[in-house]
View 1 (cartoon, rainbow, N blue to C red):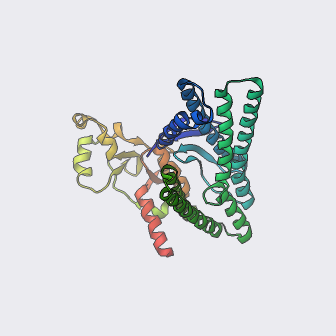
View 2 (spheres, rainbow, N blue to C red):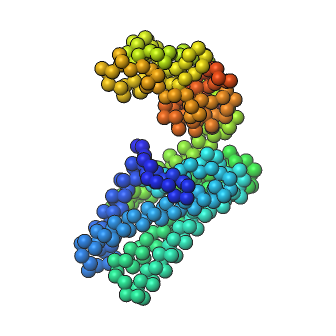
View 3 (cartoon, one colour):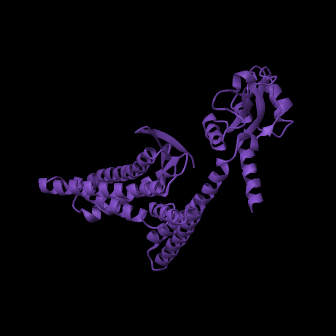
Length: 373
């Protein structure tokens, strides 16, 4: 669905996926209309709205704290963490690599539920102090209920469904016993997949029993966990493939280049309309100057095409769009994402040797997987 940057905490970029707004407003509505009026009757509508807003924000702050604990420990173990994204089912920390030892995996996975329990204990203590001091039920009620939710969050994450924390703990144990991370990941992913099916079955049973809303949520969550388990194993296999690959393995060699002095109209007429490519390297001789894409041209008003040059529109060659032939594919992927054009130029000693696109990489991965089968 896409996401946007919210800010930075402890040097970690925090992002919000657009799907997050769905669950945000559902929880806000549930807290305001049902949860707090039922559990703490006798307050005004305005107070319930304030409690709902505060409770929803604190709930997602708790989720963020949970993910921050994973990220801080991962960085302490030498695993680079790029960002944390909040989405419809919680949060996800984005790392560049997996743990190298089963013990590290166990600690990184285990700290999440522990942090949720710590947050729950703090909120419970706050609610108790508030009641003793005679604070408003609007304050103590929110703290008390959020304490309960954080306990549920810890318990849910400890369930043995990969990629939940419990599934990662199981993978760490299986990894320690078998000595094989891929086998352990396959076992954990299989368990996560069947755990997801179990939730789907439970949800269907609840719908049949008349618990329609709760049943549909279980079906939704179960199917999501099933897909996440399968996707996590596929990502692990892809990461294995990429670890030993280099840019030269997948690049298109000796690509056709365009002159920086062409007008955009000439570029469209002579290249984009006569070739199948969506982008061209810009070069003088063998010296790469940048990349020009069809998308960049489309952003320029058509009446300016005859006056504006390729040089004025292209993405200039820089560290984000240039890689060496021997550079690792994981590094190439990082640069593709940062460049904004999802392409990199493969350059050796100042000379253009090839171009590597996301499509090239996907095709290469598919060929490797077919050969492995």
